Length: 96
Image (cartoon, rainbow, N blue to C red; front, side, top):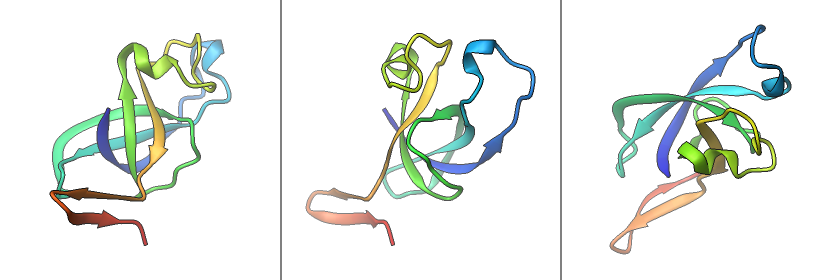
């Protein structure tokens, strides 16, 4: 899994029929300080995220393990919205 920040939405009106009804989001990878690292991924939204939220993204075969993506040609899925994280007992992030 990777930490990421939702940067926006992606619309594709023509796509594989099994992907109909799924919402695609552009997610920028972030480090443990919440700073963007330069990487990005288009991921299926399985949890109802909005722009600017910090999320967990599963990739590869794990991305096809959610109820929204099972048996679909999906390589990345947003599977959680981050509430908080800490490192060494120090809180680094808390959702407002």
